[in-house]
Image 1: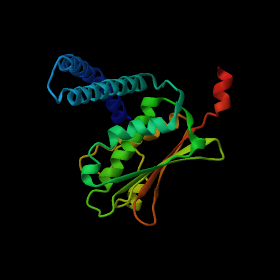
Image 2: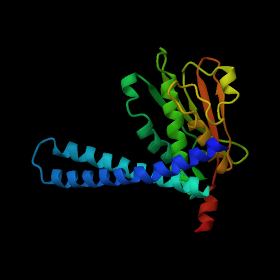
Image 3: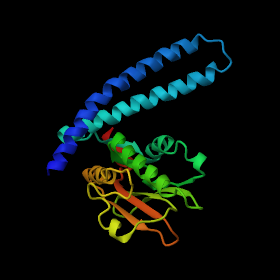
Length: 236
């Protein structure tokens, strides 16, 4: 309990401290963008686009930090109807930076029936980001590096999201306690990433688990409640 309390205090403190440099980064990028708008250099349009994307990610990081601080402080989240394919696309754009350089092939298989979900966008994107990054790390040093993201609409009204890798797999002793706090397979890991993923998913009324793939690798799966289009139409 003392470690949990310390973790909560650390998260809250980091959230407060990191917000200030993130704001400064955003302001510097905005200033750089204004200067580039006046530039006649032939590479200026490409640089403006890069600065714009960097500013977007800095703002997104600020949102993540703000949600983390709110989550630690109140345990609440802001849930609304979101398009699951969009959540996956946005999380992938950040999680897969550098994936091509390490020869990871990425594919998607998204069920049209699992389109709308009730969720806190930032929190679920953090879950997706963490699972994809873990998958890429798990495939380091293996000859076949394939990452697949799948969604499927289940009969119980839940959307099942799967992040599947072709890595080295999980040892049985680790698999049994994988989502417990301070359990990790990484030499430099703190062992809180998957624990936080579980907390977020379960706070959404879902479930998260891992399965070994017979051909090699691991599938991490979690569920979210599907919102039918008729429900959205009725709310309007």
